[in-house]
Length: 245
Image (cartoon, rainbow, N blue to C red; front, top):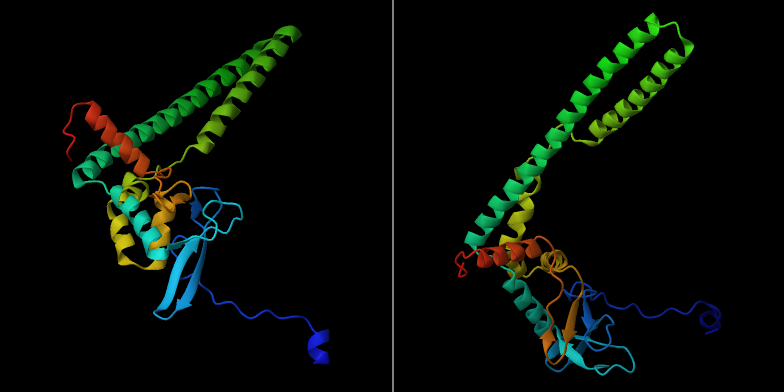
């Protein structure tokens, strides 16, 4: 007893429930904005996992939300983000065109910088020839000042070339894998594995999901590329294309 009184108090080890709740740390209370906590109670029929707000003074304080209900509502939100095959084809074509345009623009910048460097080298060579032939100190000093200005311009062009990729990444390597995720994210969610579902939720939403225990999950800020696909759909409707696909 004396050893226990003089020793460091040890709290009983709490079970790790982090692998039980998909939206742990990613959902907030609609009434106070605090993160919903998660817990499991034990009853005669087994274990009952639930989310709840533990902010004192909050309207929803201590009122539990069954885990399956909350995560089911979030799953319904995620399902609404599923684009159609036609929309994915359209979006891929539009993004490919934009990617190629940016690539061509980058190449134009590289070509212009190289041409300017070549021109500057010729101008410097011409000025050096004039310095060799000149005898007036003021004229020579003027030529040297001009050469200094050209050297600065050449350095800027070299810096521009340094920041441009020498071998631009291809659309297939960089952007196409990103666009395939919106078409397959619901399948990942349906798999049911907690890590897959957490990944889908983090990639689909740009912010934490606000949950109202009476009304359910509120539509959060959608992350890219889902937002971009939404813009494509809006563009199609405004342009008069069929709105049913």
